[in-house]
Each structure stands twice: as C-alpha cells, then as structure tokens.
Image (cartoon, rainbow, N blue to C red; front, top):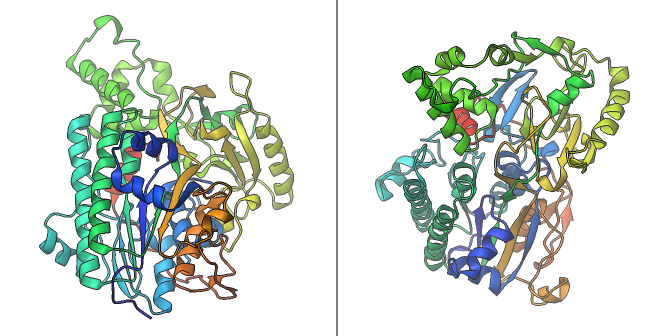
Length: 547
C-alpha cells in the first residue's frame, strides 16, 4: 500500500497557534507559506480539550481519544502523592502513525511532544518536547546519523535568560534544525505520512510575553521552514494544526487551595511532607535604595528578573535556590513571610486539594485510593456535589463568575484511565484566569503569567484530497466549523482510506470523505518508564507549568 512517489499527507504542528496571532501576521504579509495554506483550502478554529496543555493535548490529537483513554492528563503522572514527569510510555493508546503502519503505510515523525521513548512502527521518529536533549530515536542509532548529516541537533533552544534579540536567534536555530531534520528523514525514508511539529510558537509566549518582534521572528522562521518542506516533499494534502491557542490573561490568579482551606476542606500545616508553597521575597527591606549588603542587591535583581519573566511565586523561589540565594532571601524577608514559606497541604487532615494547577481541578483525598485518604467511599459523591456547587458560585473581585464550567470528571473523561484525572474539573472563564495550587496567603492576585493557553487552536486543510464539495458542507466558504482536537487522527486515517476505530472520540473533518467506523482496539499495554532527567522538570518550572 505504500506510496513510493513521496509524502501523501503532511501534518504541520504549530504549538499554541491561534487565529488571532496568525491573522495579525497574515495582515503584515509576514508568513507567505502559511497564509497560502490557509487561503487555498478550508480552515477554522480547532477546539482543544480540557486541560489544554501540550503534554496531554498532543497525545489526544495523535490518537483521536480523550485523556481518560490514552492516560496523559498533564505534565506529571502521579503515584499517590508522588509524581514523575510524563513521557511517551505513559501514552496507552496507539498513535496515528502506528495505526497507519498496521495498514502498510510508512511515516516520518519529527519533534512531536510526548513520543519518547519511541515505539516500533514502519518509519522513523525523532522525539520532541518532554524528551531528553539526546533522545532515543527510531530506528536505533538514527540520532547519530541525523547529527552526522545536518550537524548539531537539539530538542530545546539554548535561550535561557537571553534578551529578546538573542533568544530569537536561539529559537530560529532549533526551528532550522527541525526543518533540516525533517527534510533529511523524508528523503531517506520516503514516507507516505509526514508529521513535523514546531514548539517555539508556544515557548516564545512563555519566555517573552508581549514581545511582538520576538513572536514575529519565531513565526517567520517557521514559515521559512514550511516553505522549504513543501518544496522538497511536494505533499498531496497538507494539514496545519495546533494543540491549543494562546492569549493574554486579563483576569486573576485564583489560589484554589487557599479557597478550599478557608471553607474547611483542606488543612494547612507548617512544614512536613505536603505540597509546599514558597512565598516570594517582598521588598520591605530593599525599597528606597536600602541595599545593606551585596546579597540584598543580588536578591533584588533576582526577583526583578523573576517578575519580568512572569514567574509564579514557586518559580521565584526555585530561581533563587538555583543561584544560591535562598539563604540570603531568608535573611532579608520579614519573619511572617519566612513562616509562611513553610505552609503546606496537610494531606492526612485534608478532604480535597488541588495538587497541580495544570490539572485544572480538585482531587478528593479518598480513603483506599490515596495513601493518606480520609474521605470514606460512601461520602465521595456527596462531597463532590458540595464542592461542585461551591466552586460554581465563585466570583472574581469584579463580581464576575470565575469559572465557565465546574463538573464531575465523567463529563470530560471516559476510558480505562479516567480515574487518574481530578475528581472535579474547573474550567476558567474564557481561560482568562490563572489557577494556582500554591498557598499564597490570599485567594486572588494578578495573573501568574501575562500570556498563557487558550482553548481554541487552528486547523487548515488543503490539497488533492479535500472534498470538492467541502465549501458546501461548511457554514462559510472555506471555513471549517465545529472542528475538535480529537478529529485530527480520524481525518488522517480517512485520507489513507483506513477505517476509524469506534473507540475514538473524534470524527472525520467535514472537508474529507469519511471512511467506515469499525470495532477495533487502539489500546496499548506497556510498562511505563521513569523520566530520569531533572533538566526536564527544571525546564517546565522555568516555563511556569510546575509550581
């Protein structure tokens, strides 16, 4: 079945891309190749899932199923109160390239998040985000061949603490590596399906929020690589997709654990083995130019850097610790702040808590499930009802609803791994509010990051296999409506004439002729592998994903 004439279907992944960012750059004629792809076929918004974060959303896009089936809900995988950074072994469902391989089609996959360690399939894979800097590739030894062919190849940009102009150069460098690698791999393996993802379209908003010139530089570098890939691979059909959108946060930070503590559902302890909160350094002793020691001056500079980068309170503490200034900090912060820095969730005395903001919800400390569970199973549903009703009524200081939806996890997840999700899902209104699991001493503050994820990404489909009557099937000529993240894998399968599994939560996009839906399993039984790489957790903390 393999097509030796070249790439039949090309999937271009732009992490965090959304219509508002793209359209402003299209107006400036900055992205000729991407603009042509959007204008020549059909395009629209691509609704993401809950939660709309990179490590969970890309597996959903690549498998066509919700996290309750594939098993990845956030950047972390939990075992009781302990956690590990997720990797490809936590994805418990077959990916689209594995399904294509079962039907005789070959694939090249480059830089897709949460694909390390790679699994066997017919083709080649170089992992992306969440992988170590020198990842295992498929087939074995491929990374060495790749570096011999194109020179340096990095998963992550060397952009830490660089000013915008230098960071843009670092971003451009890895974007060029991505394009060079993908073209080399497609030339070598001659795949039917090609998938290349660009991560820096998201990273730039976390590291340089509001820096328009840096954002434009990143997108222009991606557009240049897209042009070269299109020229070299000459695909029949092209899809451009993103895992979620991005946008400015103009609402509030909401410290959900403080809210739970105030209402008696969570207990705070001083010290111990719970989830800590490190309160940022206040400037009480440093204002008016009072810098009693060089340590104080360094401390002020470090916290200023943290503020400019949009660091959350926990990230500020991590930064100071990493440069050896946490002890200095404790000498200059007020005593009440030092005391507050040891405040932690007391699991053994708490009924419910938010264990990580990226989970978008509340976990109940259920007896028999959690190591120190205190909520009897017979009380579980009653407690969930109490908390759902309580959280639905939360208002911002402006008197507006904080959440657009609060519900039981069953409303968002189903499948064999659904019990790994939070018990109560909280969806911030328009994703304009920043949820935090920190213990900050108050419930509301300014957003922890000025730019962050939004629910709607983008999708564009163009080429030979777009149905001739696609325009007639959509609300507006050239516009896709009601497209969802889960629809991408069924659509790609349909482009190859492969049936969709009845287990999938998505359906074929209306611009492509659908195939049969059949009963076959996409589940994968495999042992998980630890992410033994502290640098990945540090990177996630620096980007604000881990508190």
